[in-house]
Image (spheres, one colour):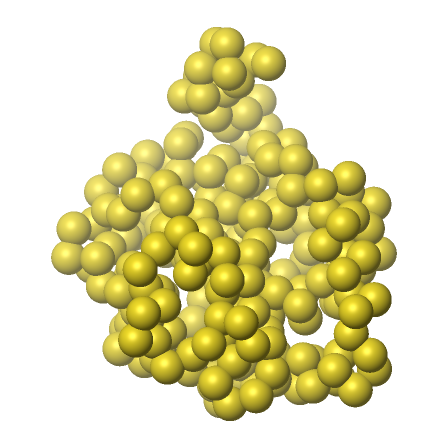
Length: 207
């Protein structure tokens, strides 16, 4: 109610001043991985959505809120990147990255690093969501409909792995409970295949 009536800008600004300076260090999921080098060198990945979005950032120091959230932040969350490392990249890469607006949006909303102060659920999604919301998947060598196999979209694999790794925590979130219940559709063999491919993605063996 407050953020919709008073305004998003004022809401974000209020969160920043209320929670600083500790807000720079929030890390709800305890993620420790450094930011993948592909955020600086997008040619390192065959993921068309990630490669194209980062290339646009390099060209214009800007992309729209949706690719920031559902491609750049989504990939970082699904791979377990430290929220502060992602925030530092946004700070360096975007022309409009004033800390008071960048930090709550990236660390709070984008990574759920504050555990729900800014957003009511982690903004994570499979490649199917990206396919519905953008043209990036056309011609990409990865298939967003598959979660395992050599052509499976890393976003889809990592999404299911994320649900498994954080099942207990996410099941308690009313907006994530239904997604977590979908894990029951996977048998043990399918779950293990997801885990193994997700681990390979995080190691950089799948780009």
